[in-house]
Length: 341
Image 1 (cartoon, rainbow, N blue to C red):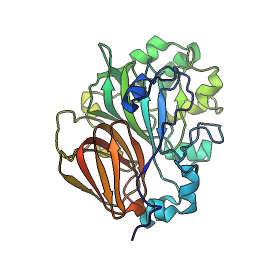
Image 2 (image 1 turned 90 degrees about the horizontal axis):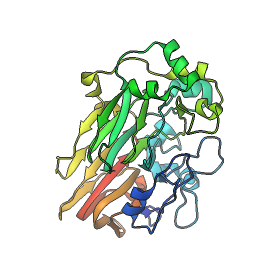
Image 3 (image 1 turned 120 degrees about the horizontal axis):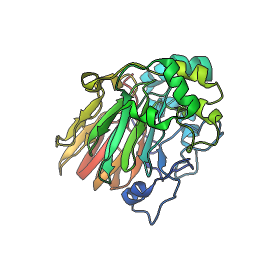
């Protein structure tokens, strides 16, 4: 039986300052009057802080509580017993709206084991991108080296800050709305200007940035204090040909099904994502902690307590304790969830 405390909750924009430009697509989606020049990331339903910060990045609920405090106060109500047995009081998920107003630098993220050894964290930072919109003539993302690279060569690129070589060594992938890319830990990558994504991540802020010059204040922020000699041990230096890229890239934009599983199979141990389109009917959603992003249209989330209206630009957190939901209306919703427990 649910209680009024466990209902889907609208959460406001949460845009901690970043080092790169962007934010117009986020403002347009939310129907906001303007955007921060350096507000390219909206951390939705976040219980994660920026690296080295005490509270920046945390989402606050409409009643004033931090979401992190609400979850840790009642983890079973928010996350469910099976999830708590596996992940304790962590949501095991960070969702962002990311609008690249300029190309992001070439960077990569640590695995769980590397993060445990060097950052005292249970989680590394595997991530995935769901392309929600694009602008410009050539919306492009970059993922994986086209050919296997020698670590000594990469080390030289980093020391010399040879941006053309770093970027030129990566696969460039032209994208359109509905495309998704799973980024395993260690994979070098970047997002090009004009690409707007819903991004799912493990709940950390560990970015090891090879191409730090003209982006970050110092190389220390690129290697997060562990030194590039150590950081580069987490880098995937292997080659990714078209066949291998096919295991992490999906093209779902033409699939108009009521429920579309968005991510490549390799993402399932880390998170899950679906596009939901009730199409004027109703979709039953099983109990789960979730973050919802409404990309278009309007509708309702019906619960045992009543209904919650939703519309384009809304972002919501859904506690497991809300029980089974019914999504109705003419809406397009991205549902992001932690891995199945």
